[in-house]
Length: 61
Image (cartoon, rainbow, N blue to C red; front, side, top):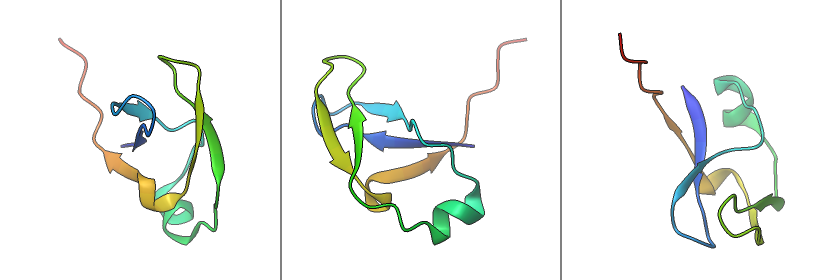
């Protein structure tokens, strides 16, 4: 599973630049992390409420 966030700049989902384990994500005190939008290069602040877990797709076989 990977942690993503919905970008406040472009509206798409992006992989979080911060690596969380399930336990550390649930107990994280992160606040105001500045993430850069991969598409536009502009930055916005995010916290744990902006992030979500999503299962990674299995590679084609």
